[in-house]
Length: 357
Image (tube, rainbow, N blue to C red):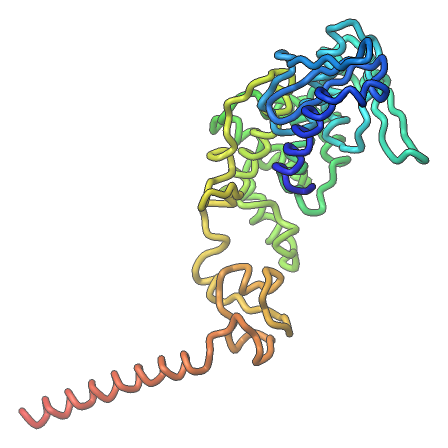
């Protein structure tokens, strides 16, 4: 069931089977059941021993995420007279979106999470009253940039710290809130977001991550690479991914979206969507040539610093003879032989020159 096409196929089967078989009348009873399958939504109701099925056009959507479609259905239910809506989900994304849209949806939203024996019931309206409207409006953008299902998190920088920053700094709160307002973000938007990233690394007065990387490295040369902020090149594409995700969340109540993820921090390669990390080298060539690993295994994964930087292991590395990433001795001997042959030819040419003279 981890494959999306299998989930869609199962729901298509259920919608078709339940709408055609009267045996499910006893299960539906007086309920009205909405089944979302693919881009369609089928409404099922039972009466007089038969099941009536019809397509609900206002709920037919090309949204790919179930998180956003939950809010689309909640808004539809509210518009049709329901005053209390319960959403069963343990996903943080759903809780964030519920807080964001509670001011738009008239009905009271209750979130039910956990298991059947240990459930947790959360009143979204009470959460919104405690956080305040301004914080609720910034939550989708803040959640996207600090790490979600589609955007990686900043190492060692948790969401609580990010929330504290936007609560205490109205200027940075306004900057973060603008994330996801338009596609693609312009250069000014990206430049402003760098200020928030610098604030995450305890330097709100610094305006650029490259400058901040240099300052942090000078303060403590023992810092590991993951403890430094990303380079400007890598951060730019990361912010584009966060902006795209926030854009989808902020348009969850719209049934149709025509924005593809490629060119927004992702790229299509051989028919597959993959992350576009950066358009710059991770370090100057002189530094890259000095990379050596300290592993003692086969060096097959990116845990090996040489593999992670796309370099072969050398004699300076501590890995063993069975390393699969090192240059073979035969290759190195062939290189040595070719160098020796070149030297001999040069000497012969010199001798011939002397004899001619």
